[in-house]
Image 1: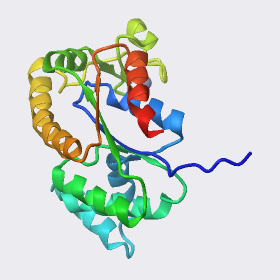
Image 2 (image 1 turned 45 degrees about the horizontal axis):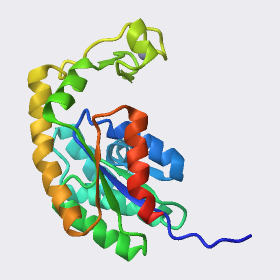
Image 3 (image 1 turned 180 degrees about the vertical axis):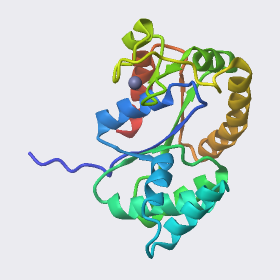
Length: 226
Ligand SMILES: [Zn+2]
């Protein structure tokens, strides 16, 4: 029997480093067949298109090579290209976007333009102490950059699951630097949460529980929107 489906979800995940939002994003992506739109990936990918007639690609590469940060507008432009290309085919889960209120406003404009559903923001909340604790506990493989957490078998074995090599702590995962990073994000996150709260589209979930429990809470929060 044919059932008419509502337009797909669009989700924005908000949370500081160490909140586990990457893991939740992956679970949500699988559950709802969403397209994982990570601006970090877009920035990496577009550099390979430099050297041709893609003006944006040339500008991004030039800034990257000169060590100049990319302006807010570039992320917006890259997201717009992806929405233009894929909005008829799928819903999206946005990763590291929006990172500011101006970007959140741009995202509202773009979803309206492409006649997509307004994004729901899911905030994975963790305290500073817990975020810092998790960041200083995690290990990574210096060969292939895989990251491991205490609940992973590879972590206990101190052996990378991909290459078998020994795991290390990231140089910037010290307590002091992790605290600094949390505080930088906390201010940004507060403003983005406020934006979505005002729009009546903020779902808040406690990130201080096991992965599956967080996921259950996320799914429950989404029920009214299914
Ligand atoms: Zn490895």
